[in-house]
Image (cartoon, rainbow, N blue to C red):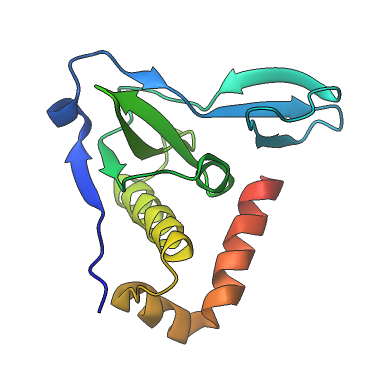
Length: 151
């Protein structure tokens, strides 16, 4: 059985304040957001920006090894580089009324889905329980990715 290889760190554990946000979003002519991918056609791009990163709101970052930038952004994650290593973080903006436990649960779900897509032979027991409660794994993952593309 494949062992899950995700390491969660507190942001202040891994940083010496040389944080570089490397994930980017593009605003397209139709006012929709999409991941920026190096070499993409930018003829219908109105604006390119880094994924949101608020150092005061980001508590955890996740080391998963090599990162699929497009997938990470579609799932609402961002990517930072610190000391030549890349980490995932929850790039969704938080409002003042957003509960901390909800934010952490959503963050863990995003990272779990990311890891499951990148490692299809791995079985995440907690994600499986959620899947068995709600529906098929593919339905949940596809719905989640679609929701992230729309919002």
